[in-house]
Amino acid sequence: MNPLKIHGCRRMLTSSNFESLLKKHGYHMAGSHSAVKTCLWLNKSLRGEGKCYKFQFYGIASHRCVQMTPTMQCNQKCLHCWRPTEIDVPETGWDSPELIVEESLKAQQKLISGYGGADIIDKTLWEEAKNPRHVAISLAGEPTVYPYLDRLVDAFHSKNMTTFVVTNGTYPAMVERINPTQLYLSLNAPDEDTYRQTCNPQEEGLWERICKSLDILREKETRTVLRITLTEGLNITNPEGYAALIDRASPDYIEIKAYMHLGFSQKRLERSAMPTHQRIREFSERIMQYTAYKQADESQISRIVLLSKNGDVKKIV
Image (cartoon, rainbow, N blue to C red; front, top):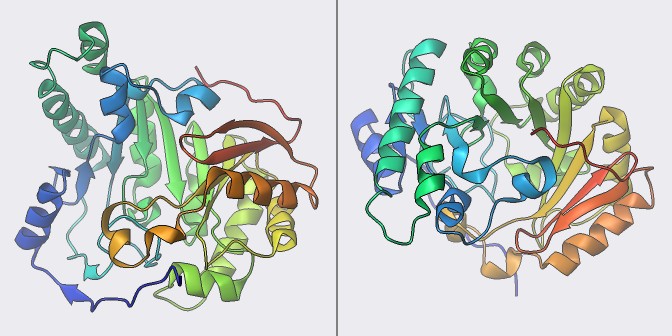
């Protein structure tokens, strides 16, 4: 079966209608253009049903993590993205980093308070969740579009929070400026042709910008990760190409993970586009044949394999 579906038509919503759509899908606005949403693993953690692979790999407590974005805008329309890429995001003015931090933490408090009445919730973890220690700036959109992202990261650090930023690498100048606790670059293609098919860039020259960001990543002093999301029928190909880009960036870690059939991506891709964990493991082994990286860990439930230079993982917490 072809894992690709026919793409729907793009449309533009007003700011109020776009905000209503986000709220319908569990997003809470934080200021005029930022958003917060609790993730599946926060919910599971509070119920004693498991923890995110970030806990297993890096020691990050799922119930104390804020998942947010400073913008829903993006210059790619990736087929595997869980957000409504068919809808153009209304442009707004930019809120200050300090306002975004304040409103994000307020939104998280509101979301967490809703769990208090449930009998199945671990009350100790619930109390801890009211005081988040980590923020994943990766919910939706491309965070480096926000022109003050470096200051936003610093503002979260001033709250004694660790920061994870996930970027598509198309704004290398901002990639160079930011210094989060851990910096992810999404590398979802081994070459430009596959990139165009998988990520549907909305501007020319984005592949060249990504390659420049790979060079910048190599020089960063903060922890760096290349995240490769694999989708059947799209980008599970050319392991030697991935290996060459990996060696170019020389990241501390590589997360090779399966596309998950969630959110709005279900309108673009069939469920068969979601690789099995065995498929991820096998392709990871093919990449390792062309690079010195070794397997450091894996999470079968999340369908992800972690590679590092020496096969070890250093916890953040």
